[in-house]
Amino acid sequence: SIMPGKVNPVIPEAVSQVAYSVAGADVTVSMAVEAGQLQLNAFEPIIAHSLFQSITWLERACQTLRVNCVDGITANEESLADTVSRSVTVITALAPVIGYAEAAKLAKQALATNERVSDLVIDAGLLDQAQLDDILQPAKLAGLGTDTDVLEVVTPAQAGDEAASGE
Image (cartoon, rainbow, N blue to C red; front, side, top):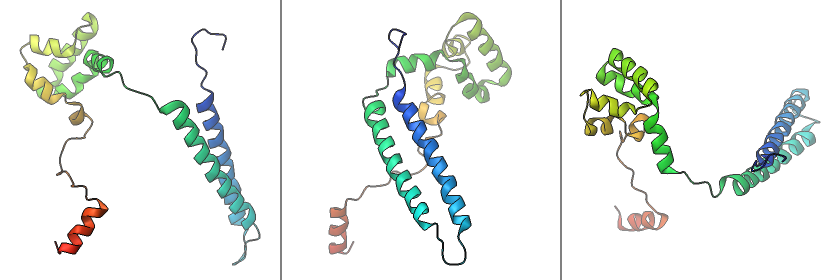
């Protein structure tokens, strides 16, 4: 690249090209299936070739993407937490508790002053830190709350032991 420090996205671009080829193979398979007559389809060779080639290409593309782009990615949790804490969008989760009008007012104030919404909510006496922490739990916001019991993982060895003991 002519730009210092720029990393060219050649692997994701190559994976996209594989996806385009597979989409084309899908059209080939569709047309070949439509062209078959009765119980005999003279186009089975191109159907099989297109399917197997697509599977192979996708397998290799996914492996290449994983090895060259995904492996080694780590989240900078501190930076992410700071970014989220400075985002005005958290006011949406607080609106049902503090009311729409108050939420809108605080959102405008946060944008104008670049203050954290949580600080403004606490300063206004609307909620305390514990209440904020409870409402703004990432798992709750993502709908990942524990509504169901945790399932016990049973290994094949344990399953065999239970079957043998009659449990």
